[in-house]
Length: 419
Image (cartoon, rainbow, N blue to C red; front, top):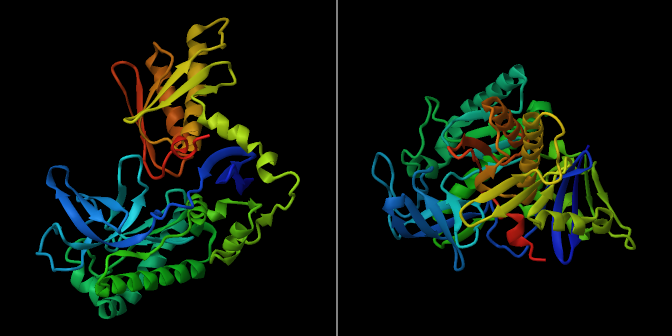
């Protein structure tokens, strides 16, 4: 059973995700932060730094975004770009979307590939690509979903081109188009596997209309600033995890209950419950304060008696595996492998719980056997597959340090909570 809980502790709100009664994700909600992931802005390019192929874009009076120029190019709204690969210059007005929160001294990362996401479909400006979630293993269903969208794209193609002059004139070779002239790309999400074709198509059509409204507004809007806010952080996190995967949503916050009931996602209503025991709050029922203190501690004990030391630094996350109280009576190599496998499994859980990302270096207990090292690598890769945020094993260095990476999206737990 999967359960989502939204509650409050020490004036800080949390979204907690449990799988079979085990806490797997802990998200402090940053209600005061105006720069939310998913917000769409008309920005002004302040500076182009060619040696790092990036631009800095003024989003509003308070915020500047970092735009990599080797990503999907941003739409330039104030002039027509020459043919070939488009470029932007200082002073240009561009249409961008926030895809990564600001972290410490780094600005928020923005992209020119505007994306709108629903329960079943994610629509973007990638030029006609149709993808299906890799978590859908049924090949017949994958083929059916692709055919469904491609047929719908062909039906809508003429009307999209004729009614949306902005897409036809401003797109300026920023993405390839197929023979049908399809303008939008889409990815069909995991929830499509058990959804009706009608529900998938209805959402796809709704997102098409919403995207055209955004592009039309961008064409004629003179002022810079936010033209569309994304979902609230709580709702966005639930949607990212997958509403279809959640059996129950529980909260003791009246305004959160109201927001969830008013959302367009009807799938959450049957599993939404309100906890109203004022004498014994939800945070105490879940021992939330104890859980948070564990997640802020550098030391993590393993069941075998070993322990991890997790040290987030400015450049990377460093993790050391120690034998601690764990003692092997017979075969030393087998004992070390067992301990390292336990540590590898726990490390992937802790990365997800603490939302640690970037470069991650792990110093496991030394193993002399290459086959044992590969077993540990497979254990790390298996744990990373359970995480919705992409993570990859890179290599074992010459010093036998295991190197991996996890994509940066939101700020880590220790940067938000200062108890």
